[in-house]
Length: 110
Length: 403
Image 1: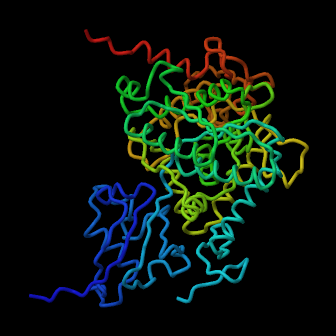
Image 2: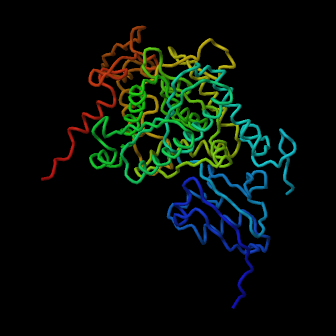
Image 3: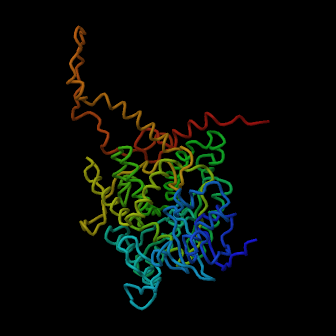
């Protein structure tokens, strides 16, 4: 049996209506593997997104979160420890234990 | 990656990257700049006068929540002297609007603004739940959109208020520009880009102080100011047409964020070419004495613009109607290819005289004349307003009361 991969806790919030895609829960704590198993690179936000889709996205309309190519659907903001992910290298931003990632949809009106 | 410093104060860490100019800002400087730009829009377009009573169309969503917060801040900071109130519409959608109205009620307490809620039930004797029961989900957004427009006017009138501000943002305007281009609706293109709609004859004017504000920045403003807002999708399917326009805008923003404001500006420029319309743009370009206004009655037919497009809805029905109307005008147009085609040999084609468009012929792009609905008395460009036309159809189809 392969040993359990080492993981780190990452806090993930879904706002702006995205919670409906993730078991109607806003705040999650994810045990994210330290390394991306596909290429053994350190876990980054791109890996977190694919991990969330694989293990936590429990909704048939996955296109509200990711597009066919696995990239985040435009119109969703990502904040890494409250900072815009565009300042942090977007998908390339490497994560460390205890980081807080927030996904906010801007698509829902009132 | 080493954190960047704020481009303005150069001391705090940057948390925001602005879509319009890529400036990296800290939280405090971002909030200040965002508010200053709304202030610029308000003053350069001369949106308000001192002592004016203004109703904020409040849905509990991010846009109207941010609008209420910013207007309260600016009113106090710059001494606008505005009397601000919240005006909400209860469409009668169980599990959706009743929840979001709770958010508005909380906002009313937080901002110290009086709140008035007017319901479709009291105005029209129909809730949206009942409308959907009768006509189904398809096309219901058209009803909701038409009713909401008039409901806001009627609510404002009840309060003796002549000015309603709404939370439409730059993304919304860009989206509407795209939609109106796609369906070649010139007069609506013009109205949708105006910052103020409704002229002196109409009883209630509307304006969009967030017209140049990016949706992304509105969401970030709400996030960093920890504003409470409601963000559940309407349970009745949103419209596919607006949904696809919205998707397109978001894709464009990803490639080049300035595209959104560019589309808004292009929409304004194109609107200037529409005969008989007088669109406005940011007043700082012209510094006119008063914000130009465009006649608007049924701007934004077809719903709330909250979308992810699932089933074809009201927009498509409206588009279909528009296309049929266009056909009526088609006979007024000269088809050039017909005049070139020669009749086939042996065929004694009686050449039809081509109708020639005269100056008095109705022009589709022209200004609509504001009058009053003969039935309900509210402003309308037709004899019977859209709301009354829709109600007539609904009332004919009201389900028989079960005994």
